[in-house]
Length: 78
Image (cartoon, rainbow, N blue to C red; front, side):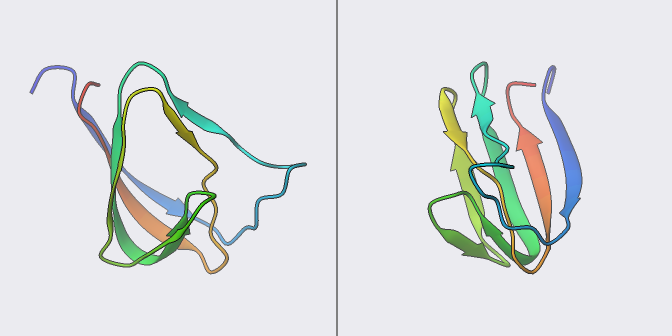
């Protein structure tokens, strides 16, 4: 599929605070993620291993994890 992309991301344990928060914005295209292992938190809720997450274009989140996690990220629009 032209323009589509994917990557495997291992996130070390971290707890985001207002001071060190990394706000991820998806202005141009969405992001989809599959939680391979661990628990991922988007700033609002936890997603355990086996979860599928869709962040539409125009959305934002603050990625964090307290135990570490591995995500398979997809960028359908590239």
